[in-house]
Image (cartoon, rainbow, N blue to C red; front, top):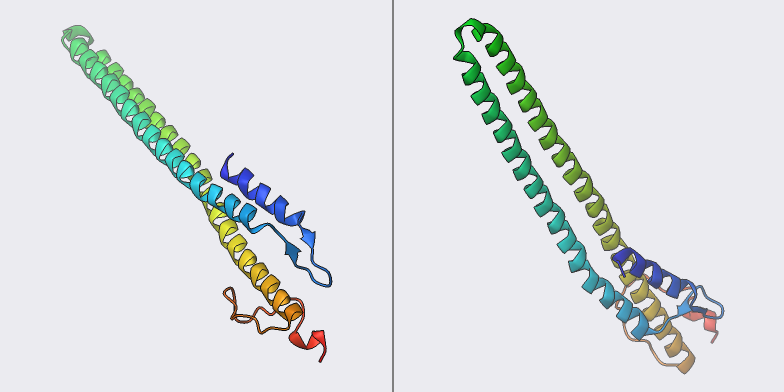
Length: 183
């Protein structure tokens, strides 16, 4: 399962979780959520490997384009030399050779530009995917920490004990204050 599908599955798990009475909090199975996050962490290196593959493919494509361009240029130069050896067609041969050389250079430039544009597009897509994944994981981690704190605080309130200090945020008090529970 790719990273985007894993994030979607985790979001669905949270969206379908049982709601807590009198709050916007939900109950989620900690082990399931942590397992899903671990799966995402393991998938991330695969996304990075794919990015490296795209970069390597780009380099190979550029190397082939350079080699093909050099071969075309070499053939054009050889053709130019051969044609120049015939004295009666020297002027015509020179012009044709220059045209072939310019065409070869244009083709080589087009191949390099196409390969670079393709690689740039693929890397930009991958960068967007990785940034989305990073943002999703950060938001998810903060949301889970806040939910866990709220659940713990609710349990302590029900038990009549003082809750431990919050690990997510010192300002997150949940959907209600301690005063809401009465005297």
